[in-house]
Image 1 (tube, protein in one colour):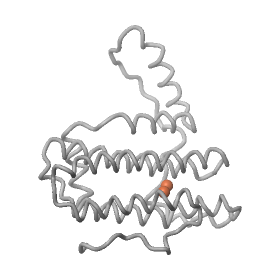
Image 2: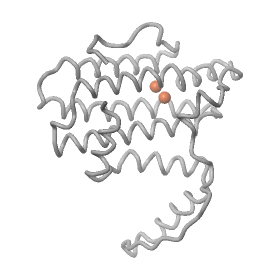
Image 3: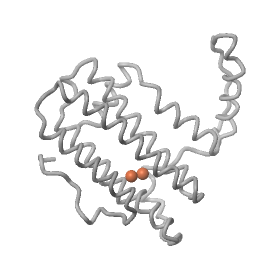
Image 4: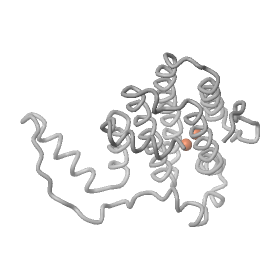
Length: 211
Ligand SMILES: [Fe+2]
Ligand SMILES: [Fe+2]
């Protein structure tokens, strides 16, 4: 994709001020990535993007929870995957800045944000406006973004070593994940926000998305 100015345009407005203001801010941050030549600042920009995206996702997810949006679980999964991509980028950049090309990163962010706004975010806003029917999308359109099954197909036993005082916590988390549903999605979302992939996983992910 060629370098270009910020990809925000009024056609991307959803009509919900809170959401639109966030999206515009994210496009401005992407534009800064394109135009700022200093690698020293790139690290701060990536951290700021990770943080702002997380805050924006939380705002959208609060709306989903408050209005019991039926597409919430699938939408949250997309947020989680994006956060995982950003954590991989942050990790890779910290280890080897040359592997993260700012132009390619900006292209990836533009593609992701535009696609996400036009699809899942618009669907959410239609629901918030009471236009529930239009939230339903053909299977083909959502195949790429299919949510994981509400329950894992197979439960397995794992053996891990944890401090004795955390055994009960671990059991409770494991039980929540085994039950699936909203609680499992919350645990997954929380983990996505605090855990980074290892360096090898991060690099593989980055090479897959920065093309
Ligand atoms: Fe959004
Ligand atoms: Fe979203």
